[in-house]
Length: 353
Image: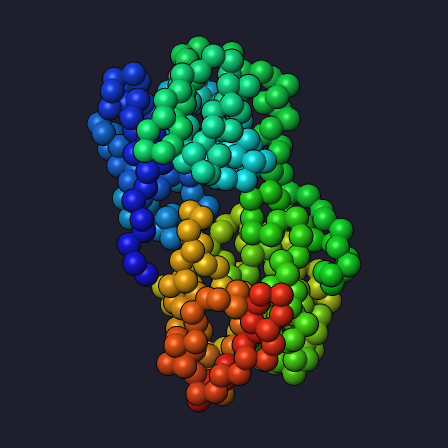
């Protein structure tokens, strides 16, 4: 995959340190850290990080940084807490609340986000939690930070730390009538229409060892379990650890009832997957951590599927109709059929020659 684009939000996060408005003091916690997280004056021993997105997590792991579960942070333990919040409001608010709980009494919480990713909204959220804050704009981003000794609103803190907690959503489109989800995962509060279209097209004859590439909270895997009695093993590959944890719980009862073995993998499919699958279902992502379209991700999913399928194995794929996947499909598969085009999506069946 090509090198990730320039990280303006990370550069903005560093500005108050570069200008001397905040000094480095340890220990430091970095929530949703990204690959630039070798911070000035800090070695690996002085930095604790969280990151649920596997490609970034792998890069951070290579730096030897200390890992922390984002949902189980120690209270009042860090002199500096840095945050690169996501765009989704409830998830971002929960992350800011956890940052405020984790910072020491005389510490500082620092947050940055691109203007078109909710930068001003996050600054307003931090101000609601902490009262007085300082804020500057840089690199088309907004960076803001609390004053040492800030007194956080206890009621708001308690509410927001639960803002992205897992919850049940009722849906007749899901086998069983409901699914477990949480804000911030893909299509968290609904069934994605592209995935629903693929589910309608799936044949009942899929059998043996089947994989779901980019499984999310488990919708397509649930449909495979419900529709395909010949499936014996189902393996889910997903880069978002938060979504994968939900998928494990969403599939548990149906898998037990069917006697199907389910394995989940926190993994970057673009890095390749071990071979041996009889079929793969896939609604490939075409965004990474930013909002810009990245069709090369989908093409990498297709290449990984071609390598992972046995001879004669089938890929069942749905994608936005405009995405340029045809060349990758033609290179990796002997037979390619576009079975359906509807509502801006295309459903493709590809057979490995």
